[in-house]
Image 1 (cartoon, rainbow, N blue to C red):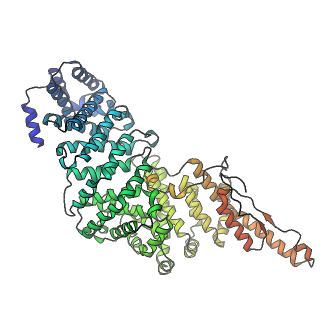
Image 2 (cartoon, rainbow, N blue to C red):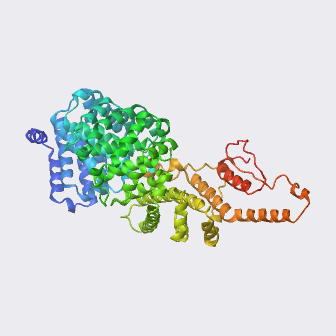
Length: 636
């Protein structure tokens, strides 16, 4: 069909204007030798010629098409340096007009399809290669342009049985891909509501019966997706999961409420043929799973839903499929590796839901995660380690005595390596700091999960890891620092580890030097939300700096209490008991009703409860009122 369009174009009796033909010849003759000034002057001439000359529509389209086609075929390097030129606005406007025409008249002729194709390719390739997508926002985020694409999606969704020509669908897919690329590369603060106009049309496609039908009809052994399947199963999910603007929470709730049972029905069919899956099927399932990850905030409402548990069963089956596991490689970029990794991320969110965690333990999922901890992909291993530490039952721990030392030492080793790489990334642009930060957070989460077992604490002493852990703490920041500090706090309940921590003046001083939040109303650190896929994907490891600093301060207070303050209270208690043993005056025992009065804020109640319980267990009388409930961090 494309060849036919080209032939029709060549037979068209309306050639480009002479000026445009001359400039196109110049571009083709020396694309690499055109500097920014010369190419900009050529584009200026093209814009003037196209805007000012009273050209017939066919001549105008051919003139524009010749210009765009020439730039596509040669793509002069200087083009990237003038990506804000008005010529691209002119190209954008033509795409907009053609999309509007499609929605109103339900057709484009062959010349118009060919122009749409070449214009879409130019903008797509420019967006993909430009070094800073913020430079093109002024012309790519035009509201009428976004509306025309959104209306086109709605038009396709409503007229599914009589969808437009596949070459038109290909250009719609290309344009959505353009916006996905921008969303993934644009700094988070710049997103705002730039692409909100495309959100609801995308949701409409993802929740339509056409989505389910296209997925159900997808064959496991197919080697190629249809254009409709690419649009619904790949590109629309990609736009949604790369969207960083407002209203996403409401949109995700809308999807999950409607689509959860449908996702299960899709997997009910396709999991039976998992051993036969080719790349197209894996891509479609991967995008479905990523959409589920994005719905993390709504897991709580559905966790006991039978459909949701069926979904968990299907995902566990996927992780246990040897055909996929055997193709995991060190690069983690093949489809099997990406599919396994995305599924692990779903479970890394679910472990924070008590009911889901209990169900995972009932399913003996630890065995699956343990097997994945030996694959050649470091990313998958880190995810598997973290999940293994959370899903092991008491019996698993007893039977895994030989595995714990290796699990601990490997996690510490990977953490040291990641911290070193993170430091090197400051001077090496080829290293992705965001990915390194995500890996570090996963590793400290794994350590936090391991800290619950006494065997691991003993192994830390055996391997002499306390100084290494303190060194790692000193080099971390943000949420990773907070989680590692929580790990250290748990370790401090072991007497020998506690002693080693107390003998590290540099570590103690670093805890004391953490500034206390100025505002008692500082937001409580929402650990679970900050660990979410959405946040990690954007390297947004904290709800806010205030929340993270407050969380670090609270964890530091807990460690300082256990390592420094508690021994002092222990001394008070021992002195008191000794004094009681050396007096026969019973009034001494009754002189004070309470030994200590504890005041606290609502945000710190969990820590204070643990301290109060410990002191009470050791014979001290504490004035401590649990019955009063104050909000907003007020003192109790």
